Length: 289
Image (cartoon, rainbow, N blue to C red):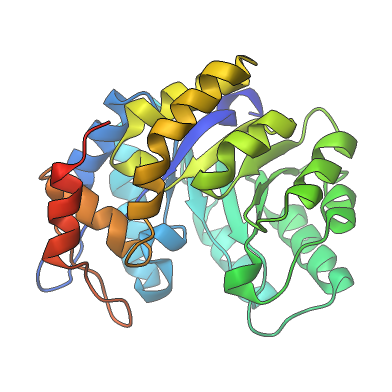
């Protein structure tokens, strides 16, 4: 399983119609686009997939659609995070018969647990889950950081296989890279820092940008993982204008503008997010890399 989740994962957006129902045709086009672009695996219903505003029944429908669509052609990771441990355990039980390769679970938000609470939260999920767990550390969204010491402690659990690191703290990433077991993945959770994290010893990324520009991003990741850091840095420099545009009007609104410029899906998002401006779509249409 570890080898299957190295390289480039893509945090899929959730395409929507104008009435804000799920656009399954758009989702199908997106999946074809990223797989044809060379991504190594898919991540469904993370934050980029607008998971906070999609109902559980909609999530199950999207999951079943993706499973049927990809037919095990690439690994599938499912986003399941929250701040109610027992509720997540119940949802894991509902998922147990579905063909999922791993669970990506964001650290508990809002209630700001101490490090021991975070450790026990993930340990409980890992004990109860038939799927391996990837920790997702994103302090600017959750208001609490999973410290490197906690990550390394969690890395000893046989059913916790990695961390998606979006702390924006390269010293923390370096500590994890230098001390983690070989069978524990350090995954970048921030496109703009991916080159740096891979250079420190990370094994891959779960990318937003790869929704729209998978080939270019995959090339940079593969080159850097092959330890050709000079060429990897040059490729990364070429992507910098896209990194900036993909956060210009928030996420996932900005990357949906990129996808709209490619006629893959609309810019529609559910409140409290708002859709990207026509100007941003035009910026993506005019850019060349």
